[in-house]
Length: 323
Image 1 (cartoon, rainbow, N blue to C red):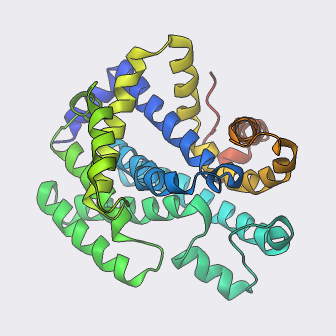
Image 2 (image 1 turned 180 degrees about the horizontal axis):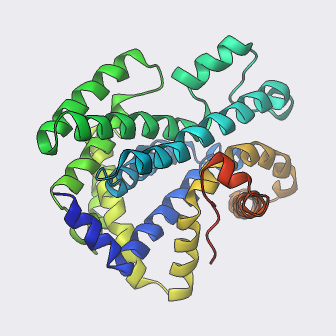
Protein backbone atom coordinates (compact mmCIF):
# COMPACT_ATOMS: atom_id res chain seq x y z
CA UNK A 1 0.00 0.00 0.00
CA UNK A 2 2.92 2.38 0.55
CA UNK A 3 3.42 2.81 -3.22
CA UNK A 4 0.81 5.58 -3.05
CA UNK A 5 2.86 7.35 -0.38
CA UNK A 6 5.90 7.18 -2.67
CA UNK A 7 3.92 8.94 -5.41
CA UNK A 8 2.47 11.56 -3.05
CA UNK A 9 5.91 12.51 -1.74
CA UNK A 10 7.62 12.39 -5.11
CA UNK A 11 5.06 14.59 -6.81
CA UNK A 12 4.59 17.20 -4.09
CA UNK A 13 7.64 19.37 -3.44
CA UNK A 14 5.78 21.41 -0.81
CA UNK A 15 5.33 18.33 1.34
CA UNK A 16 9.01 17.49 1.01
CA UNK A 17 9.86 21.07 2.03
CA UNK A 18 7.60 20.75 5.09
CA UNK A 19 9.39 17.55 6.10
CA UNK A 20 12.78 19.22 5.55
CA UNK A 21 11.63 22.12 7.72
CA UNK A 22 10.62 19.75 10.52
CA UNK A 23 14.00 18.03 10.27
CA UNK A 24 15.74 21.40 10.38
CA UNK A 25 13.96 22.45 13.58
CA UNK A 26 14.63 19.07 15.20
CA UNK A 27 18.33 19.06 14.34
CA UNK A 28 18.82 22.60 15.64
CA UNK A 29 17.10 21.65 18.90
CA UNK A 30 19.22 18.51 19.13
CA UNK A 31 22.47 20.44 18.81
CA UNK A 32 21.30 23.23 21.13
CA UNK A 33 20.47 20.84 23.96
CA UNK A 34 23.77 19.05 23.59
CA UNK A 35 25.63 22.31 24.20
CA UNK A 36 26.60 22.18 27.87
CA UNK A 37 26.58 25.96 28.13
CA UNK A 38 22.81 25.79 27.53
CA UNK A 39 21.61 22.50 28.97
CA UNK A 40 23.23 23.09 32.36
CA UNK A 41 21.45 26.43 32.60
CA UNK A 42 18.04 25.03 31.66
CA UNK A 43 18.04 21.43 32.98
CA UNK A 44 14.27 21.30 33.43
CA UNK A 45 13.75 21.80 29.70
CA UNK A 46 16.03 18.90 28.75
CA UNK A 47 13.59 16.02 29.49
CA UNK A 48 10.94 17.74 27.38
CA UNK A 49 13.27 18.24 24.40
CA UNK A 50 14.75 14.74 24.68
CA UNK A 51 11.21 13.32 24.72
CA UNK A 52 10.45 14.36 21.14
CA UNK A 53 13.56 15.42 19.19
CA UNK A 54 15.12 12.05 18.30
CA UNK A 55 11.70 10.33 18.25
CA UNK A 56 10.73 12.95 15.68
CA UNK A 57 13.69 11.89 13.56
CA UNK A 58 12.79 8.22 13.95
CA UNK A 59 9.22 8.98 12.86
CA UNK A 60 10.35 10.91 9.79
CA UNK A 61 13.08 8.44 8.83
CA UNK A 62 10.81 5.43 9.19
CA UNK A 63 8.06 7.17 7.25
CA UNK A 64 10.36 8.16 4.38
CA UNK A 65 11.83 4.67 4.03
CA UNK A 66 10.43 2.93 0.97
CA UNK A 67 10.42 -0.80 1.54
CA UNK A 68 9.58 -1.39 -2.14
CA UNK A 69 13.20 -1.58 -3.29
CA UNK A 70 15.24 -4.16 -5.08
CA UNK A 71 17.91 -5.72 -2.85
CA UNK A 72 20.70 -3.81 -4.61
CA UNK A 73 19.05 -0.45 -3.90
CA UNK A 74 18.33 -1.45 -0.31
CA UNK A 75 21.95 -2.44 0.24
CA UNK A 76 23.01 0.94 -1.09
CA UNK A 77 20.60 2.66 1.32
CA UNK A 78 21.70 0.62 4.35
CA UNK A 79 25.35 1.16 3.41
CA UNK A 80 24.68 4.89 3.82
CA UNK A 81 23.59 4.27 7.42
CA UNK A 82 25.86 1.47 8.65
CA UNK A 83 29.23 2.60 7.30
CA UNK A 84 29.03 6.24 8.45
CA UNK A 85 27.77 5.00 11.82
CA UNK A 86 30.79 2.71 12.26
CA UNK A 87 33.31 5.27 10.98
CA UNK A 88 32.07 8.19 13.06
CA UNK A 89 31.41 6.09 16.15
CA UNK A 90 35.04 4.94 16.05
CA UNK A 91 36.27 8.51 15.56
CA UNK A 92 34.07 9.71 18.42
CA UNK A 93 35.11 6.95 20.82
CA UNK A 94 38.81 7.38 20.06
CA UNK A 95 38.44 11.12 20.40
CA UNK A 96 36.79 11.04 23.82
CA UNK A 97 39.23 8.32 24.84
CA UNK A 98 42.21 10.55 24.14
CA UNK A 99 40.79 14.02 24.82
CA UNK A 100 37.53 13.48 26.72
CA UNK A 101 38.88 14.03 30.23
CA UNK A 102 40.90 17.04 29.09
CA UNK A 103 37.84 18.69 27.55
CA UNK A 104 35.40 17.53 30.23
CA UNK A 105 33.28 15.35 27.96
CA UNK A 106 30.33 13.62 29.64
CA UNK A 107 31.08 10.40 27.74
CA UNK A 108 34.35 8.55 28.20
CA UNK A 109 36.06 5.55 26.63
CA UNK A 110 39.26 3.87 27.74
CA UNK A 111 38.87 0.30 26.50
CA UNK A 112 40.74 -1.77 23.93
CA UNK A 113 39.75 -3.24 20.58
CA UNK A 114 37.20 -5.68 22.01
CA UNK A 115 35.55 -2.92 24.04
CA UNK A 116 35.45 -0.77 20.91
CA UNK A 117 33.77 -3.51 18.89
CA UNK A 118 31.32 -4.14 21.71
CA UNK A 119 30.40 -0.46 21.85
CA UNK A 120 29.83 -0.35 18.10
CA UNK A 121 27.68 -3.48 18.08
CA UNK A 122 25.67 -3.05 21.27
CA UNK A 123 26.11 0.30 23.00
CA UNK A 124 26.86 3.31 20.79
CA UNK A 125 27.77 6.63 22.37
CA UNK A 126 26.61 10.12 21.52
CA UNK A 127 23.81 10.74 19.03
CA UNK A 128 25.14 7.92 16.86
CA UNK A 129 22.73 5.56 18.64
CA UNK A 130 20.14 6.95 16.20
CA UNK A 131 22.00 5.50 13.19
CA UNK A 132 22.54 2.23 15.08
CA UNK A 133 18.81 1.98 15.79
CA UNK A 134 17.81 2.88 12.24
CA UNK A 135 20.22 0.35 10.72
CA UNK A 136 18.69 -2.50 12.73
CA UNK A 137 15.09 -1.39 12.19
CA UNK A 138 15.46 -0.88 8.43
CA UNK A 139 17.24 -4.20 7.92
CA UNK A 140 14.72 -6.28 9.88
CA UNK A 141 11.72 -4.55 8.30
CA UNK A 142 13.07 -4.92 4.76
CA UNK A 143 13.89 -8.61 5.17
CA UNK A 144 10.49 -9.43 6.70
CA UNK A 145 8.56 -7.38 4.15
CA UNK A 146 10.39 -8.84 1.15
CA UNK A 147 10.92 -12.46 2.13
CA UNK A 148 8.37 -13.32 4.83
CA UNK A 149 5.19 -11.25 4.96
CA UNK A 150 3.99 -7.88 3.68
CA UNK A 151 1.49 -5.38 5.04
CA UNK A 152 0.26 -5.28 8.62
CA UNK A 153 1.25 -8.89 9.26
CA UNK A 154 4.80 -8.07 8.22
CA UNK A 155 4.87 -5.03 10.48
CA UNK A 156 3.62 -7.17 13.39
CA UNK A 157 6.37 -9.76 12.81
CA UNK A 158 8.92 -6.96 12.46
CA UNK A 159 7.77 -5.42 15.73
CA UNK A 160 8.07 -8.73 17.59
CA UNK A 161 11.60 -9.28 16.29
CA UNK A 162 12.65 -5.71 17.10
CA UNK A 163 11.22 -6.04 20.60
CA UNK A 164 13.19 -9.26 21.12
CA UNK A 165 16.36 -7.57 19.90
CA UNK A 166 15.76 -4.65 22.26
CA UNK A 167 15.97 -7.09 25.17
CA UNK A 168 19.39 -8.39 24.11
CA UNK A 169 21.05 -5.25 22.70
CA UNK A 170 21.88 -2.70 25.38
CA UNK A 171 21.42 0.56 23.48
CA UNK A 172 18.70 -0.69 21.14
CA UNK A 173 15.68 0.39 23.13
CA UNK A 174 12.05 -0.45 22.51
CA UNK A 175 11.18 3.04 23.72
CA UNK A 176 12.96 4.33 20.60
CA UNK A 177 11.94 1.55 18.22
CA UNK A 178 8.23 2.17 18.81
CA UNK A 179 8.52 5.44 16.86
CA UNK A 180 9.87 3.57 13.84
CA UNK A 181 6.98 1.11 14.13
CA UNK A 182 4.46 3.97 14.27
CA UNK A 183 6.09 5.51 11.19
CA UNK A 184 5.88 2.36 9.07
CA UNK A 185 2.27 1.89 10.17
CA UNK A 186 1.54 5.40 8.95
CA UNK A 187 3.24 4.73 5.63
CA UNK A 188 1.56 1.36 5.17
CA UNK A 189 -1.86 2.96 5.68
CA UNK A 190 -1.01 5.89 3.37
CA UNK A 191 -1.32 8.27 6.29
CA UNK A 192 0.45 11.36 4.88
CA UNK A 193 1.99 12.72 8.06
CA UNK A 194 2.48 16.33 6.99
CA UNK A 195 -1.08 16.45 5.77
CA UNK A 196 -2.83 14.68 8.64
CA UNK A 197 -0.69 15.97 11.52
CA UNK A 198 -0.34 19.54 10.23
CA UNK A 199 -2.55 21.84 12.28
CA UNK A 200 -2.42 25.33 13.81
CA UNK A 201 -3.62 23.88 17.13
CA UNK A 202 -0.77 21.34 17.31
CA UNK A 203 1.33 23.67 19.43
CA UNK A 204 -1.56 24.08 21.88
CA UNK A 205 -1.86 20.29 22.20
CA UNK A 206 1.92 20.11 22.65
CA UNK A 207 1.81 22.60 25.53
CA UNK A 208 -1.18 20.89 27.17
CA UNK A 209 0.65 17.55 27.16
CA UNK A 210 3.60 19.20 28.93
CA UNK A 211 1.35 20.82 31.51
CA UNK A 212 -0.76 17.80 32.38
CA UNK A 213 1.62 14.90 31.87
CA UNK A 214 3.11 13.17 34.91
CA UNK A 215 5.78 11.35 32.91
CA UNK A 216 7.54 13.25 30.14
CA UNK A 217 9.92 10.89 28.41
CA UNK A 218 10.17 9.29 24.99
CA UNK A 219 9.34 5.95 26.58
CA UNK A 220 5.85 7.13 27.50
CA UNK A 221 2.53 7.88 25.81
CA UNK A 222 3.27 11.54 26.52
CA UNK A 223 6.47 11.23 24.50
CA UNK A 224 4.52 9.90 21.54
CA UNK A 225 2.02 12.73 21.91
CA UNK A 226 4.76 15.36 22.11
CA UNK A 227 6.51 13.94 19.05
CA UNK A 228 3.38 13.87 16.90
CA UNK A 229 2.09 17.27 17.96
CA UNK A 230 5.49 18.92 17.54
CA UNK A 231 5.77 17.52 14.02
CA UNK A 232 2.30 18.89 13.31
CA UNK A 233 3.43 22.29 14.57
CA UNK A 234 6.64 22.17 12.50
CA UNK A 235 4.75 21.22 9.32
CA UNK A 236 2.26 24.04 9.88
CA UNK A 237 4.96 26.59 10.66
CA UNK A 238 6.31 26.65 7.12
CA UNK A 239 3.36 28.69 5.84
CA UNK A 240 3.42 31.06 8.81
CA UNK A 241 6.97 32.43 8.76
CA UNK A 242 8.88 34.44 6.12
CA UNK A 243 9.92 32.32 3.14
CA UNK A 244 13.59 33.21 3.56
CA UNK A 245 13.62 31.84 7.10
CA UNK A 246 11.71 28.68 6.16
CA UNK A 247 14.11 28.10 3.26
CA UNK A 248 17.09 28.37 5.60
CA UNK A 249 15.59 25.96 8.13
CA UNK A 250 14.71 23.54 5.31
CA UNK A 251 18.31 23.82 4.10
CA UNK A 252 19.48 22.79 7.57
CA UNK A 253 17.00 19.90 7.46
CA UNK A 254 18.31 18.66 4.11
CA UNK A 255 21.76 18.58 5.69
CA UNK A 256 20.59 16.86 8.87
CA UNK A 257 22.64 13.70 8.20
CA UNK A 258 25.84 15.74 7.97
CA UNK A 259 24.97 17.52 11.22
CA UNK A 260 24.16 14.23 12.97
CA UNK A 261 27.53 12.85 11.84
CA UNK A 262 29.78 15.81 12.58
CA UNK A 263 28.11 17.69 15.45
CA UNK A 264 29.20 15.31 18.26
CA UNK A 265 32.79 15.97 17.23
CA UNK A 266 32.33 19.73 17.62
CA UNK A 267 29.83 19.99 20.49
CA UNK A 268 32.51 19.13 23.04
CA UNK A 269 34.77 21.89 21.70
CA UNK A 270 31.98 24.40 22.32
CA UNK A 271 32.90 24.16 26.01
CA UNK A 272 36.03 26.14 25.21
CA UNK A 273 33.84 29.09 24.22
CA UNK A 274 31.91 29.21 27.50
CA UNK A 275 34.30 31.57 29.36
CA UNK A 276 33.89 34.21 26.66
CA UNK A 277 30.18 34.50 27.44
CA UNK A 278 30.36 34.59 31.23
CA UNK A 279 28.84 38.08 31.16
CA UNK A 280 25.52 36.70 29.82
CA UNK A 281 23.64 35.10 32.68
CA UNK A 282 20.92 33.78 30.33
CA UNK A 283 23.57 32.02 28.20
CA UNK A 284 21.38 32.67 25.17
CA UNK A 285 24.01 34.67 23.30
CA UNK A 286 26.71 32.08 23.91
CA UNK A 287 24.38 29.27 22.84
CA UNK A 288 23.49 31.05 19.60
CA UNK A 289 27.16 31.59 18.82
CA UNK A 290 28.06 27.97 19.64
CA UNK A 291 25.10 26.65 17.65
CA UNK A 292 26.09 28.78 14.65
CA UNK A 293 29.71 27.66 14.92
CA UNK A 294 28.85 23.96 15.21
CA UNK A 295 26.35 24.10 12.33
CA UNK A 296 28.79 26.00 10.10
CA UNK A 297 31.57 23.52 10.85
CA UNK A 298 29.28 20.58 10.07
CA UNK A 299 28.27 22.10 6.74
CA UNK A 300 31.86 23.01 5.89
CA UNK A 301 33.10 19.49 6.54
CA UNK A 302 30.17 18.05 4.58
CA UNK A 303 31.22 20.19 1.60
CA UNK A 304 34.87 19.22 2.12
CA UNK A 305 34.04 15.50 2.29
CA UNK A 306 32.02 15.82 -0.93
CA UNK A 307 34.81 17.70 -2.70
CA UNK A 308 37.39 15.10 -1.68
CA UNK A 309 34.97 12.26 -2.59
CA UNK A 310 35.20 10.98 1.00
CA UNK A 311 31.40 11.12 1.29
CA UNK A 312 30.99 8.65 -1.56
CA UNK A 313 33.29 6.21 0.20
CA UNK A 314 31.69 6.53 3.63
CA UNK A 315 28.04 7.28 2.82
CA UNK A 316 27.81 6.14 -0.79
CA UNK A 317 26.73 9.58 -2.00
CA UNK A 318 27.36 13.29 -1.48
CA UNK A 319 25.98 14.48 1.85
CA UNK A 320 25.93 18.25 1.37
CA UNK A 321 22.80 19.88 0.01
CA UNK A 322 23.00 23.45 -1.31
CA UNK A 323 20.83 26.28 -0.02
